[in-house]
Image (cartoon, rainbow, N blue to C red; front, side, top):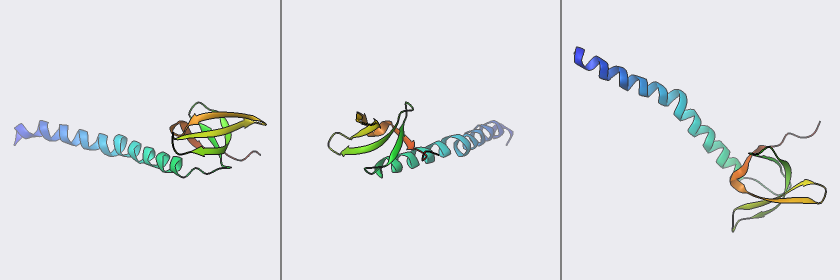
Length: 90
């Protein structure tokens, strides 16, 4: 039985790593992907680079969004670069 205790410790260590590190990260990635798929025109968003903008157009063909970052200033970004919904201005 003592020969299996080392193996048991390694298995326990991997189980702990999975439940405290890998699984929460996968859950967070799934939430972000669901958010990206539900983006609508007029929604305020933040890109992974920290750019705030409002979605003006969605192009499903090449998976891009047209964001208005200032009055009359629009940029084209990949949908996967959208990180979160922007908080309304106070």
